[in-house]
Image (cartoon, rainbow, N blue to C red; front, side, top):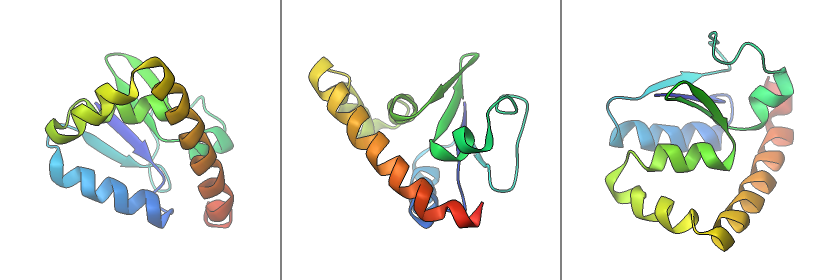
Length: 111
């Protein structure tokens, strides 16, 4: 699994740093420094606007990417299962998209 995140965003970087301590078989890629073939087709805005996970041959973006990542982490797996329930999944998606948009515009000058 590969996780693509914006390392120039302080909040994003802090969260990923926390996850790095909890996971071992995941490759974290700071997109402000590195890119690879799995994300080259994305526009700069699409790339920096959301977190992305490459898992089982698919690129997953946004709120769903967190659920995939959390499924690999024992203590976070419960939150992932809860947020996959239909009503909570929609609320999670709205919350994620709102926060991601705010962080994108906050950090736009750094990218």
